[in-house]
Amino acid sequence: MNIFRPVWAEVDLGALRRNLKRIQQYAGSEIMPIVKADAYGHGAVEVVRTLKEEGITRFGVAILEEALELRREFPDIALMVIGPTLSKYSEILVKEEIIPEIFQIEQAEALSAAALKLNKTARLHIKVDTGMGRTGFRENALENIRKIAKLPGLYLEGIYTHLATADSTDLSYAKQQLKIFDDLFEKLCAAGIKIPIRHVANSAAIMQIPESHYELCRPGIILYGLLPMDHAGQEAGFEPVMSLKTRISQLKTIEKGESVGYGRTFIADRPTKVATLPIGYGDGLRRSLSNGGEVLLKGKKARIIGKICMDQIMVDVTEIEEIQEGDEAVLLGRNGDLFISADRIAEQCGTISYEILCGISKRVPRVMVESK
Ligand SMILES: *Cc1c(COP(=O)(O)O)cnc(C)c1O
Image 1 (tube, protein in one colour):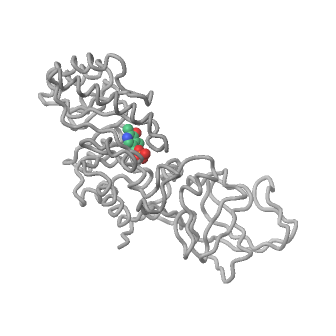
Image 2 (cartoon, rainbow, N blue to C red; image 1 turned 45 degrees about the horizontal axis):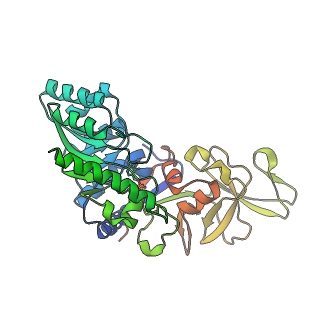
Image 3 (cartoon, helix red, strand yellow; image 1 turned 60 degrees about the vertical axis):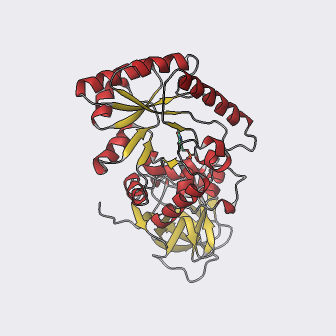
């Protein structure tokens, strides 16, 4: 794609590599990076390529489309869909060697039939619902897994569950979930069903619950340098990977009483220097940042004024001297000594950093850089 408009998301692959190393200090088990939603908006292909260079061989995505995109690029990695896949696509799973989560008998039967038809063995992971209330076997889990274990053409490589409160300061519910998981696993062992890989830990559990690490961990957000809980501090040791940048299209000065933007929600109460930036909610910049969001220019903070448009925003730069058209503006990331984090933006928008990161639109080109 040709890039004509000066709007880009910088993805620091050096920070990504260091975040992986930091995760490996928290957990000794195998790491399955979660690269769903285009690696939380960072670009799944580049993220996988980079982590593969660091020795990672297994990756998790949320949907079959994402797995197939990665399979085309990387024929030799293990790929798992940590979400539901419709049974009618079992042959694709088997042919492309993509590992599904299985939480219904019918899914397992369809996978078994596909494996027999294609004369292959299908790898699968059993999903157990221990209290998240999402997909997973719940009551009758033992009985159902015993049935699945008897089906031909299947390899039960893994069993896993997901925690609802791993980011809490009170970990009692998470520990209850682990107890349910451990009890089930013990019963499976007693029944002679051997499953080599257990996995439970997301980012928060990697940081807070060592007994949840088992044979494999599933980090998402910390790989990208954001923290899953407010009570973790800088010492956690993760660096944000993504920045969002643009350049000033036009500078002008408006008089006291003049307005900016749709609906005239900003009226100048003094002569005001206004910078227009060529980025808007069509790029994933939340409209709720209208008249309040922040932008960094020349190492200083400037405020978004007026309503955010689909493709443009206006910023009050009255206090910033020596500013020029074409100057770089930072919406997410560092500029001089100042930094805008995805957490800060999320707080202003009433959401979490995850949604800010994966909300940066496809039309924003990702530019890979590598800091030392
Ligand atoms: C998204 C997801 C993860 C990663 O979660 P983070 O909080 O980003 O670490 C892990 N496991 C499952 C099942 C998920 O859906």
